[in-house]
Image (cartoon, rainbow, N blue to C red; front, side, top):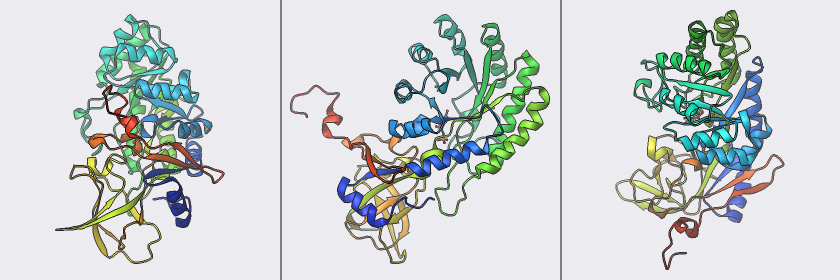
Length: 414
Ligand SMILES: Cc1ncc(COP(=O)(O)O)c(C=O)c1O
């Protein structure tokens, strides 16, 4: 868990000026983090981090990542538009979709994106509609048990990717279709803190690349190990060491790929959470107390601003700005949605919280704002950036009722 990038006094001033709730991001932290990841994989000359745009689709943050040399992993038409607006084009964009329509492939093709094919049934369609990319990637689902984790589930239950047999078939098809640059992709873990599990994914993919070469004499040009590097949401957890992870992947690369003449293969990642997650904080104010069978503190943010605790029971650390007393109270920290899982924390031991106190919900920089929604007519919060120069910049205003009703043409609505 990263400390706030500013003093609590400054946070209070920011909250007064902009109004709560808001997500706050730390530019300097994000930049330093990306550089550390790149340094850990500097041994691989083709290494690229394709930032998973879905994790934080704010163009001002994407600009920072582009400036740091990241590319973009997009999963939808909107993300393609966003990536292109930020300045990514051609093979700096990886279109990693599933259940994809011909129009979506055509859009990615117009941008010159690398297409990451999720299903063998798509391949003939790509040729038929004349959207064969210069560079193609195939998404692997190993199916077997023992790989994958709680969030992603057992691979054989996951809707993503192709079987081993289908991958070999897809590679042969691509070669016959004249596509010369072929890659492999997988994503079998999510929020994974175990370096063993992350390394196991690399080993599985390197072995697959060797098998592809033996089967069809195709040299896999890049291997995308997916996203899924976890972050320590709970103070008892430890962050993945990029340096150690990079070293382990290098050792496996030397063991499996180089001896097969695959030493030029690029290794890619498409992390989202690990890149921006720890550098975002949801800042909210306590507005109510309720004392029934439990003690509740109502805050002015809700599950609409951060769905992970309600959806997955995910832990997000919470601190009370300016609190000097010990944590002696047990609270449920709740929003105002008509959903009983609209809780940021349950039975959380915290210092006494008074109305007006600022609560900081940590690690909201990825899959936070992005997963927001409008149920109950809730309006999503604003996003602020603490720039590397130390200024605060509003990079997305809060939604208004006019935004909420914008798709309705009905008298009396704003
Ligand atoms: C295909 C794919 N790539 C990358 C990511 C990013 O995952 P994370 O943010 O956990 O690194 C996801 C997450 O859903 C994904 O589905």
